[in-house]
Image (cartoon, rainbow over all chains, first blue to last red; front, side, top):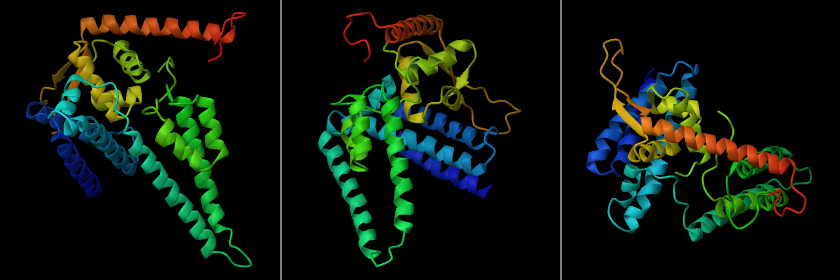
Length: 199
Length: 111
């Protein structure tokens, strides 16, 4: 139970720090609402495992923190509270990041992956190479590609190229193709299902 | 109102019983949406007068849990939601027909 309580404390702290981005009249209301939702998640009897409840609660808080932060970026760049105003009036989606930042993040991610793969290969280079790096990397690569392809299929829109071209790029070059898609080609958050799907 | 896929999911849940109040986590589960998508959407719907919110009254049997904020469609919201969902259904069925049987010489039938 103490685990649940500490998750609640962590979640409440995340919510409070997110609410600081709102105008004062909205912040208290939002903070009260989301704290109650956090309790509802941690008490959700339909999720049997307390670990999964904790994960869901943290994902709930992370989603709020991420969107609040994204919507508050125009406030930092321009008029004060402009981003919070979007929350007050509602915002259809978070703004995608600047292209330069996305490309830099993608390049850095690729260099890290390439460095780890090359470093591991060099370190384990001997006459009888151990198969464990491949046992680790191949499932990771398949999982990453599957994630990218799932994202492409579910996205309502992608940038610069057609969906099938991005899918080919993802398949042709692992992991650079997927990183390119996520940093450049992705137009916005993936949709949970194609439009028109009955719930 | 632009009917995105997440918005369509939320409206379907709300329209299923327009009088029933839903709190955020309830809607998240029913519409299968993350928090970062749902709450800005609810704020926008509320701003447009399509959704109304109300704080739960403290109940003696609630075992001390914090009061929740409940959302429900307004009368105007229910009307607009039904209209938009019907329009989306018509568009989707029309698209399916075009994709299944593209007319001869029609460009872009398989996009």
